[in-house]
Length: 306
Image (cartoon, rainbow, N blue to C red; front, top):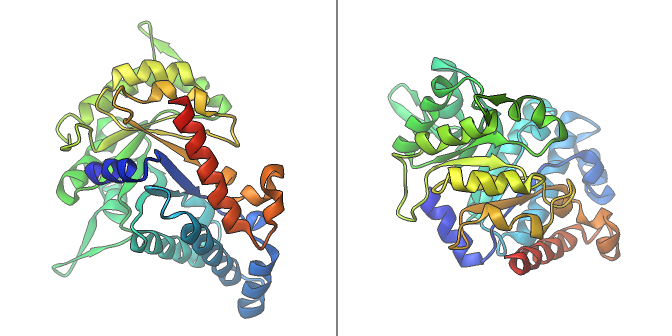
């Protein structure tokens, strides 16, 4: 799957992933009003509004980008109807030819970790029939439990041609409380990066990159520069662009000399662009067109920086 992602990045010339992290406050009133009219102010109504909102974003941007990253918690909060909207979003994105990175941040040990991997990037055996469940192309994984928590995912990656992105250095302000702690002269995130490089060493694609990627926040560009050297064959998923403060100039060192090796995420900066002053002229009705323009602007920002 890493080969597919790299191929699509090259084709679009856009190392960009759009984070599909919907909130009701992002959804234009005309979409909410119709969903509430059809389903009431219920979980089902909220899920219907989310799905319609997502379709607009996807339709407006799918030809510009290689991938999307739906964050499952934004859907889980609406219960089973929300999870149905998540599943339908994944299906719709794949129908449009997009690589789907399921931002699920799972991590456990043994059969529990295996079950997470099966649910999101694998297949479940039901009476001898192999059935895919959420069927994302990649999943984000928390490495806190060590190799026991990662191996079930890498096993599924090898069997199903899928991939993962392991949390190494996250973009949030308090990430350093644990990730920056030093042990024997090195921060914890560096140890994690070294393990990511090791976990992915047997899963190198034809493109030269591993199916085991890493998450390193745009808000820490110097760390990104250091981790790029630690993980030369690792694709880095970079959150924190735009709304969290990351800019194109911060991203240069996340990439390798070939111009590859990183994919930059923007969520509300794109999907709620119409709420930002720079795109306010599009209005609520033009929320999807505003998202498209935000992608174009982000693509230019990154290209200029590189």
